[in-house]
Length: 369
Image (cartoon, rainbow, N blue to C red; front, side, top):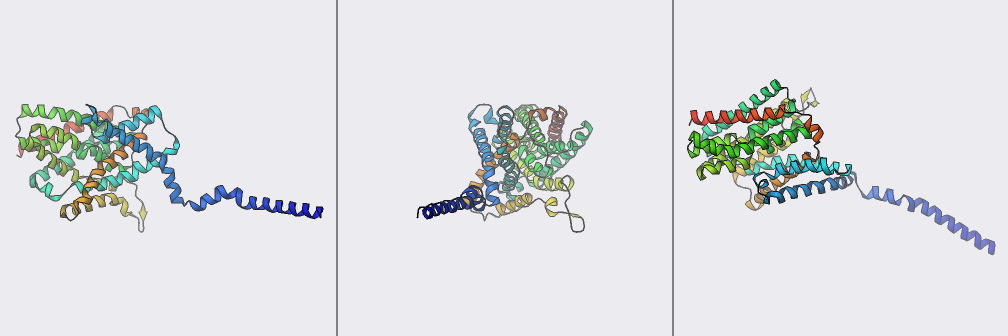
C-alpha cells in the first residue's frame, strides 16, 4: 500500500508537471499573441510616441500666453519644441512608431480637413481679378523659387518645400507638399524655420511700408493676402490697415490656400516615386493623393452648406490641433547636426522667394487696380 501510494503520488506529480509544461509556461506568450491581433499590437506600439507628441502639442498651445510666442502659430511653436526636445532631452526608440504615425498619416488627414475652412462664396468675394492675381503669384513664385534653387545648388526637395511654403500658405503648405515629396524631417524643419522668419518680418514690415507706398485699404489688404506666408501673419498684418483691409487680406489668402490642391497634385506627378501598374502607368494614388481628393470634396461639401454647423465647427477647431501635432512629430525627427549641414543657401533661397513674392504682388495690385 505504501508503494502504491507513493507511486500514485509520484504519478500525480508527474501529471501536474506535464500540465504545467503544456499550459502554464507558454501562457505568457501564446495567450497574449492570440488575444492581441497584429493591428492591436501596432496600435499599442504607437502609444509612447503619441503621448510625447500630445505633450509637445499641448505645450505649444500653452506657450501662446507668452508675449512673443503669441504672435506665432502653434504649428511653428510645436516644430521648434519638438526639435529642442529631440536634440537636448532625447527619447526612447519605443516612441518612433507613434511619432511616425503623427508625422505622416495624421498630417494627411489634417491637410484634407482644411477643406472645411473654404467655400467658393468666400473666394468669389475678391472677384475674377483677385483670383487671377492669386494664381499668377503662386505659379510665378513656385517657378522662380525652383529656378533659383537650382542656381544656388539647394537640394531639390528642400527647394520644393521652400517654394510651396512661400507661394501658398506657409507651414500648412509645407506639410501638404511633404506628404508627397517625402523629404527629410530636417528639410521640413528648415523650410518651416525660413518661412516663419521672413513671414514674421513681413507681418511687422508691411504696415510701415504701406505708409510710404500709400495703398488704399483694399489694395493693401489684397497685397498682404497675396504675399504674406502664414494665415496668422496675414491677419496680423492685414488688420493693421483697417477692417476693410483685413477682410480682403483674409479672403485673398484663402484664394492662395485653394491652390494647395493643384500644386500638390503637380508635385505628385513630378516628384513622387512612380509605382508602375498594369501597362506601366503611374498608380492613381501617386497622381492624385487621396488626402487631396478629400480636401477638394470637403471644399465642395462646405460650399453647399448642407453640412450641419454642429458637425463642422468641432472639425474646424480640431484641424489646426492635428496640424500642430503633425508638426511636433516632424520636429521630433529633426537632428540639429543634419540641419546645420544644410548651410545658409536654403535661407538665402527663402529670402529671395519672399522678396520676389512681395515685389510681384505689389506690382500686380498697383498696375492692375
